[in-house]
Length: 319
Image 1 (tube, one colour):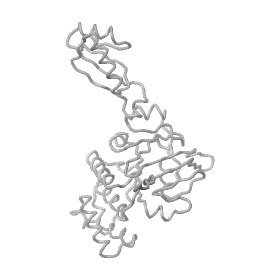
Image 2 (cartoon, one colour):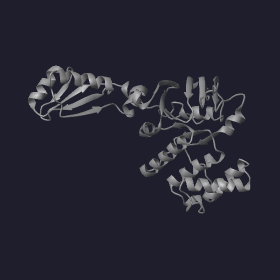
Image 3 (tube, helix red, strand yellow):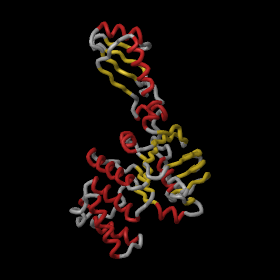
Image 4 (cartoon, helix red, strand yellow):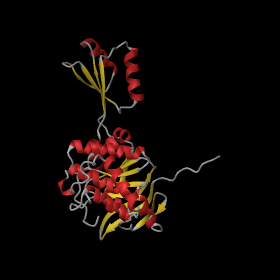
């Protein structure tokens, strides 16, 4: 028996948006598989938030087409809204209510019914480690607790796709890593995450695929490792036991830079297994022994700066 493959969580073709004379999106294509984390990187003003607003039906595109969870944005906006959750840059919680009351309010808005809604609220308080805080006013919550509650409220309706727009902005490192673990657990459960962030470490940690948006265009897309290999600056650092081995290796490997005091050579390389094997094979042919070896590749900071150049101005308020 044959099975029909699941449609992608998000598909966009030629998506365009302008505000007056300001072009925010100049025709972007997206394809996000289900059950993955897709991260959209870009400087302020690149169009990240505009993309999220279009895909979550908050604003309409000027051109192109898109579908989310198998539903067309233009012809089936209600079905899209029923299938998604959105967590914006700022927590959308009510300070005058308790954490549990916030969740019950969302359950009522989703028409879950009294018994089901309250059970859903209690389950989410436990999932997000907010049981003890559930009866306290949100005005007493820390930043990390507010963000966890905000994401829990997004999950009340059991969305297939969640848009996280700068979800850890302003959080301390411990709270940020706590949010990362929650995201991993959601994806393990089959949820698709569309993540925008300016924390490049965050994209590196979480994303299955990363796209870089610059001046309204996608200038690169791939895994973190693939993007890093596109940027020059990667190298292998080889350390030798003595000066004789260092000299022999220097004659074999070219181009390279050497440090006689540290007995090391630095050889340009893209960090791939193939390039590393070729280098070691050349040394082995001349019976040259390497004492220690380390591979250094550009990080996402290097990728981001190389692809986007100078930072842009803030997005216009409607973006």
